Amino acid sequence: MPSWSNKPSGTMTAAVLTSLGAHPPSACFTIDQAYPKPTLPSGDWVLVRVRAAGLNRAELRGRNGDAPAPAEFGISTSEYHEDPPKILGEKSVGTVETAGASTPFHPGDPVAGWVYGGGKAHDGAYAQYTLCHSRRRFPIPPTSLPWDVLGGIFTSMWTAWGSLFDAAEPNRGSTLLVHGGTSSLSLWAILLATDHPCTVIATTRQEDKAAKLQDAGAHHVLLESDLDARLRPPVPKGADRILEPVGPAQILNVALPHLARRRDGRAVQGVEPGPTSRRRTSRRRGT
Image 1 (tube, rainbow, N blue to C red):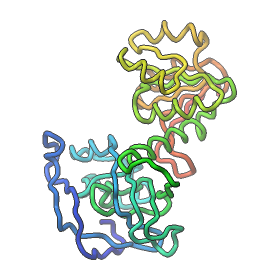
Image 2: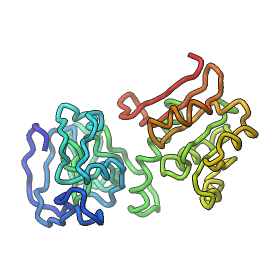
Image 3: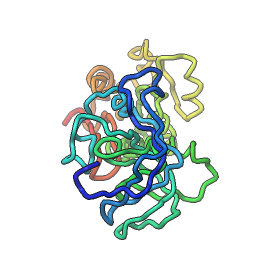
Image 4: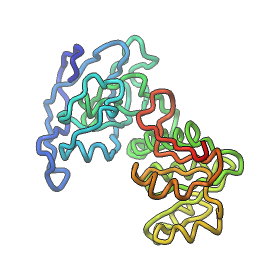
């Protein structure tokens, strides 16, 4: 746990990281039915009864013992350490068990979000209960969706929204190129972008996934094996907005070479909305 005061009260069930890099991935964890249950470190926090936990590539690195970047600790950057906590898990949905006095929540409220330092600075969401700062918990409106579906929605949708509308800011008539269109982030970007007046082009390495991207709303689906030639007919001057979720190296290798040569062209790697974004890379051409 971080250095701030937290005295466990009772026990809970948790998937504890005990064997770094083991195979299969489930062998990395041991189920502990008597793990200490945390309490609120301050009135700004909530304790959430986890109903479903999403998966994140950062957790793959965590279970392999790879050192995270300090920025991944969010508001807990001062607690940075290279070793993973005993409980991974950055994003989850569930119900509020205990609400801090300074939060807008109440016990029983359905909430979603990510632990924002949890699964890094302190224990995360692979457990019956998880701590979360109230700045990164959001109420879930009435819905018929089951918990396991909700668990896979919020972080990807949130990041896609920030990438599009906080950073890329497509105009009416913009052309958006989504590189690696079948990731969860990319699919949400396609769904959100087609609800706005812009043309969406998605790429994939596998031809059998093209129909999935078209069903999501992509106006054009291009195979990456011949991207240069296939992109010219729909956008001969390049795309003026590019979402590049595959990785930082692809900003130079794929995004910038296909960015329209105009003053307001933008290539975005990935952004969570608001002034506290954890990952923000927005490159403009012509500025």
